[in-house]
Image (cartoon, rainbow, N blue to C red; front, top):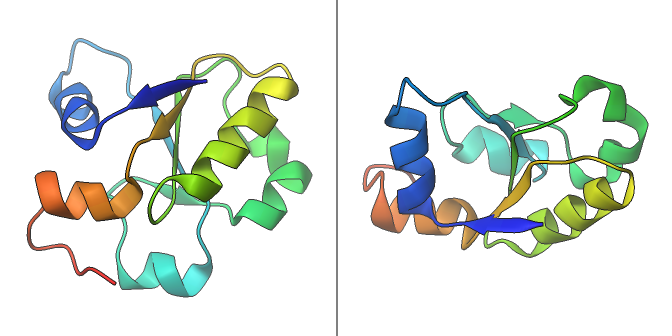
Length: 107
């Protein structure tokens, strides 16, 4: 599993020459409704094993949660299932709000 900072992810998303990563938000629906990175797809952590077919194979795929802990667990799980190109967003949406989108609600 690779790690990516909020700034590096923002730069990647802004670079039209790079393939856009699949943004996998593993938080709960109420958290996602409150705030999320534009373009991210919600698949709560507990649902990921049942919805693997919805994920791109191979990546790139960036796992996202509130602070980075749940998403790290999902990223490691995906790698154990043979997924490649998996990243964990360090600091989660909290880091995104602090570094990239200062208008994003925080909790």
